[in-house]
Amino acid sequence: MWQATVNYLTLDLLGLSGHLEKSINFFIYDTIKIWFLLITIIFTVSYLRTHFNTEYVRAHLQGKSELYGNVLAALFGIITPFCSCSAIPLFLGFVQARIPIGVTFSFLISSPMNNEIAIALLFGLFGWKITVIYIGFGLLVAIVGGFTIGKFGMEKYILMDVKPMEGELEEVKISLTVKERAEEAYRYTIDIFKQIYLYILIGVGAGAIIHGYIPATFIAEYAGGDNPFAVLAAVIMGIPIYSNASGVMPLVEVLTQKGMLLGTALSFMMAVTALSLPEAMILKKILHIKLIATFFCIVGFGIVCIGYLFNFILR
Amino acid sequence: MKIEVLGTGCKKCKELEMTVKQAIAKSGKFIQLEKVEDIAKIMEYQLVSTPGLVIDGKVVSTGKVLSVNEVLEFIMGENTL
Image (cartoon, rainbow over all chains, first blue to last red; front, side, top):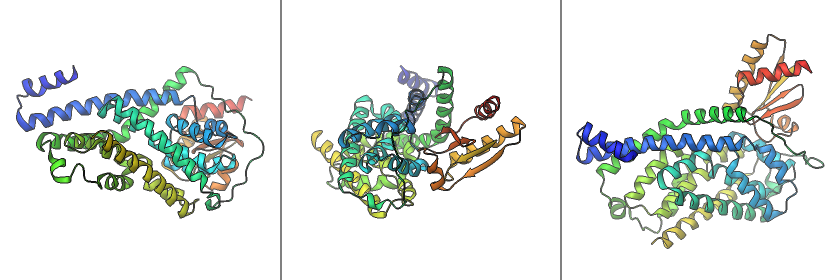
């Protein structure tokens, strides 16, 4: 229905045709659709999330057995907000509560990877199937990655001395009315939207040009869609561009239409969200570089495997 | 009354500090405001997400930037106790 409206606008009202029509049609259709979905999904997620906070998660992870703790931490990562500026208190706070380092990493991998912006964009651009696959495999990387890091016994690489607290944490209670929750969610949604709408506009704009002017077989022909190193290159490229994830994803969608393999795209997007250079720089203040490198290598390896697996299955 | 804003200097922490300043001005009370940036001190309050808002040694909010009115409610609420 929305496509028909945009078609009417570009074809009949503006009387456009050819490449230009294709690009402008795509631009209007995608921008409005993604904005709409973003606002809806971010509002829903942030409303649900007023029932939890990081303190609540910590109290629930305390004293859980290792593997179960990893699974629980990864799941909590979906629903709790994550800001890389909170990475240090989060890490130390978890250590303080005697939560194993591997469980902490499961949370630290899952939380930024399954953030509401990434989920909303994936849903808007690729549909629910890819979104479910992304979340499912994202959780897998978080669980297995965290578990593996835990097995390396790297507690000694935490550079700050944290005194473990005694006894159990109190149950965290959050008592808010529906109105307060809605207000908080509304404020959060507006805040996020203000931060990213421009990136989306630029990302979709660049995508629109590619969509209209570059032939569908372009990547397959020139950049080697089935190049064996494509996944690896995509993951490495994904590391430095965390803050612009919202601009990058619309571009990735267009690239897949032009012949980029879906596994490569999936790996790239996971690398963008889960492996962030600014977060590593912040964590470097309290963690030895060896621990951070291990964290990046294990997560990177997991993401690369998923990419190849997908390219292989969907072949 | 003493209000502390806990945060290592991120954008949200600065926003909360500004909000608290406005709320204090609006309340018309004499309130001491302190910004705590030392991570070791922040950890003593046992919170896991910043910014944190502490009123008279008690953590009242974590991980979010409150509105001026919400902070004002905390200030006024404390007063009636």
